Structure formats: structure tokens, C-alpha cells
Image (cartoon, rainbow, N blue to C red; front, side, top):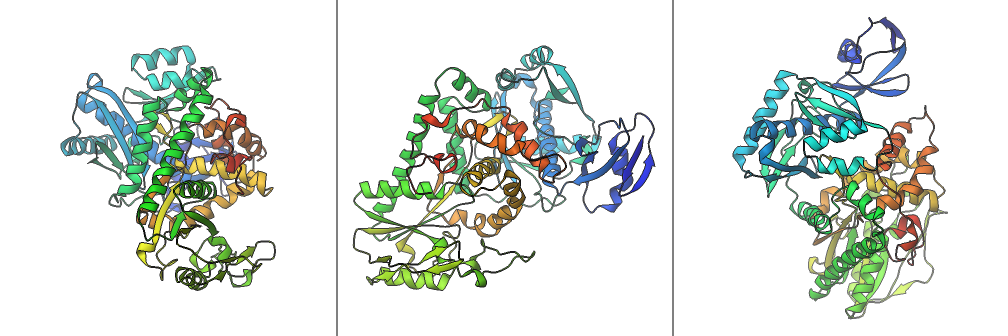
Amino acid sequence: MKVTVNGIVTEYAEGAVFEEVAAKHQEEYGNGIALVIANGKIQELQKKIKEDCEVSFLTLKDPIGHRAYIRTAQMMFLKAITDLVGRDSLEKVKVEFAVRNGYYCTVKGDLQVTEELAEAISKRMTELSGQKLPITKKYYPMEKCMRLIRKYGMKDKERLFRYRRSSGVNLYCLDGFYDYYYGYMLPDTGYVKHFQVIAYDEGLMLVMPDEKTPFVLKPFNAQEKLFATMKEAAQWSAHVGIENVGGLNDVICGNHMQEMILLQEAEQERRIGEIAKEVTGRGHVKFVMIAGPSSSGKTSFANRLSIQLRALGKVPHLISLDDYFVNREDTPLDEKGDYNFECLGAIDVELFNRDMLKLLGGEEVELPLFNFKTGRREYNGHRMQLREEDILVIEGIHGLNPKMSYSLPEDSKFKVYISALTSLNIDDHNRIPTTDGRLLRRIVRDARTRGASAKRTIQMWPSVRRGEEENIFPFQEEADMMFNSALIYELAVLKQYAEPLLFGIREGEPEFYEAKRLLRFLNYFLGVDSASIPNNSLCREFVGGSCFKV
């Protein structure tokens, strides 16, 4: 077969795999090659070359390559536990959620999680890495696949595959250990060299390199508030019996979705009520600062929190930090020369602090309104003066940044971090990244409210994520309380809105691979009609029909 790389043609013998092509060109790359794109299709390195093709490479620094590294390491982690304690001692090992560069896993069975166990797992994983054991993929007809997963007690996968439309499934095998993975894998264990397993809370934390530095293992940064929020969400999911997609599909097929929607909405309302009580319980609070990443539902949350505050005797007033944008010509530029609306410099911080201090001092202030069409701040007679029962609910991405409200007394502020921290997993070993849920939310909302294509939203997403990493995530632990806006049912609702938009991205466009990945992901879900969702739900901010101005 003739393989073309950067215009240079090389012939490979029948039976050659793409790993041979990658090895020939590895020195040209600063990062390890993880996958190839052959004739426009992503292929694993262990795949045989079956035709003449033009090839490019994806490295561990590419999002897809990094995810392949994480998946492979997780399979090695599960294999190591099985080797150490045996299948009979394990009831279930579950990859629960990610906290920065750590992946929290719980273990149920006849063993105690200790630091010694964590060290033994790390040691066994190091041995597996040194042995460079191949990871093979084999297609199984559904009937045979179901027999195999029943043999190994994989009830979560049995539940998942019950709703699979295809006639078979690809399973991966590592030295006799079988598992299913949603996404690509590396060809052997030798590719995974950087990891650490530590005992954390009631489980184990698998610490991995991040995407920016794939060959550097940074110390695990314990973010206790975020961890506690995600653990609480996982426990609630277990309580209602929906820990994975198969469980959600069971509820849909059992005609219990209406009850589940109401139960989830009640849980969120309870949590919002708790935050409102905490705010009012602190007598000096005049500013509730709400911040969170893109598509976390900040606007709907701010409205619902305001209602709860009003029920407790407060008079809330909503303020958006977007109204304090500097005029368009004064907006900072990013490295590409585009307007950087997400940096702190895009906000008139001095004006915001002057206005808030005047309000705190009892003065009347005329508040600005930013005109996004003209790109200028305007004054339209919106005047305000704070009375004793008044409280400002301020929403914006920089709400938790101390520099945003540097002049305001600390006891006058109550900070809330909000994000969509999904607790739902595909199965026990395939987690759903929280960013996927937010991206799908944004794709649906941008198409509905801004006329933006899914292609454009996906195109902008890396820039949005960089802004979050710089301006939001470093301050999330500063929050007085965290709120998880993820809804256990929402991906089944977003499915029918997002799929037509994603199918609009054509093969050959740079965004096609991400669109295809998201379509494969949504294929696990049965769809749910949005008609039964309450009009004050955070989900309404994205699919439409909200009773709030969003």
C-alpha cells in the first residue's frame, strides 16, 4: 500500500499497521503520536493499512489523542486491580468523575481502600507499562457480546447494550481482561508511562497528565468544594437509581420520565433554597456574586435564586456584569487579533466598583446597559438605591475573581459557583465529561437564539475553554457555595435538538470529527420530549420556553 505523509509517498507491505507509519515520522513531532487520520477517517495505530491513503497524525496534545491516553490508562488501572485482588473480590469498580487532573474511582467488594492498595495498583500499572502488552479490539455479534459481559458480571454494560441499535459491539482486550470503551485506544500499555494512584476520600484517585503537558505528571490539586459537590451529585444519582445511560433509558421506557423530571427539578429547587437561606442568614450580605463557565445556566439560576430570596423577605435586583463591558473600541485583543470578551480587561472594573460602593453607601446610582449591537455602554434612566431589604444578584464570568469586586467589604459579598457537573456516566468505566454537556447546551442555545451553526459553536469552543481556564476555574474554590446545574435527564432532551445541527457539519470540515464524536455519544440515549419540562427549569434556558428573560 502507498501511504502519503506531507506529500511524501512510502510503500508498506500487506499486513502493515499504522503504528509503523507513526514510528517513521515520530521524530518530526514534539509529542507522542496517538492516532492517525487516514483518508479523512481517524484510525487507531494498531489498525492494519488496507488501502492507499493520505495520512496525518494526532498527538497526545490533541484533545482526541489525550482522551485515548486517559482511556488506555483507565483500562490498565482496572486490569491492575483485577490482577491484585481477583474478580471474585470485586463487586464493582466505577470511574465516577474527574476533578482537574484526577479521576475519582470507587471500589465495592471485599477489600479496603488504603494507601498500600493505591501504591500496589500504581506498581502493577508500571509493570504493565513496561511489558508493552498489546490492546486488541475485536467485533462481537450482540448475542455473543452479551454472553461475555454477563460472564464477567458487567451489569452496567448489559443495561447499556440493551438499547444499542447496531448488531454488534467492539470490545477491547488487555491480557485476558475484556472491557468496552467509548472512543479510541492506544495500541499497547507501553504508551502510558505517566500516572499515579492515590487513596482519596472513600476511593482511589487516578492522577493523569493534562492535555497541555502530556509528559509531565503534576501533583494532584485537591479542590475540596468541587469534589464534595460532584460526590453529592453522584450519591443523589445512585439514590434515584440512575447512575448511567442504561438506567436513564430504563426510566424512559418504563414511562416514568415525568416523575423523574419533577424529582430532579425538586432537588435543584431544594438546593437553591438552601443557598438563599445561607445568604439571608448572613446579615451583612448585599451582593450575591454568581460565576460559572459557559452554558452553566447562570441566568436561570440567578432568576430562581432571586425568587427564593424574595420568599425569605429580601428584594433582589438582577445585574449582569456584561452591562459593564468597556466600549467595543477599548476591548482587549487576543493573540489572534480578535476581541477578547472573556478577559477581565473587557470589563470596566473601576466603574463597577464605584457604582457598587455608592449603592452600599445609600446613594442613588444610574446603572448602565450594554448595547451589543452598537458595542457601547448606554444609560437609559435605570436608577437604583439600596434599601435595607434590597440585595443585588450579580451574574457574570468574573464574579468570583477578587479583582472584580476589590473595593467591596468581604462580609457584604456571597459568592456562588455554578457549573453543569453531570453525574451520569455511560457505564461504570466510561464517564461523561462535564464539558460535553455544556457544549451540547451551547450548540442548541446558539442555534436558537443567535442563529449560529453547530460548526461555528464547535469552532469557538477551544477559545471559550481557554477563557474558562484563565478566568473562572482558578477562582471556583473561592465560592461560599457551589451549585450543580446539570439535570440527570437533559442529554435525552438535548439529543433531538442537537442531532440535526451536528449532522449539518460535512465530512472534510475541521469540526467534523467533533460533530461525529458527539453524534456517537448521543446515540446511546433515547430521546425525551421537552413538553413536560417546567418553564422555570434551567433546561429551558437552552431549548426555549423559559419563563425568565434569558
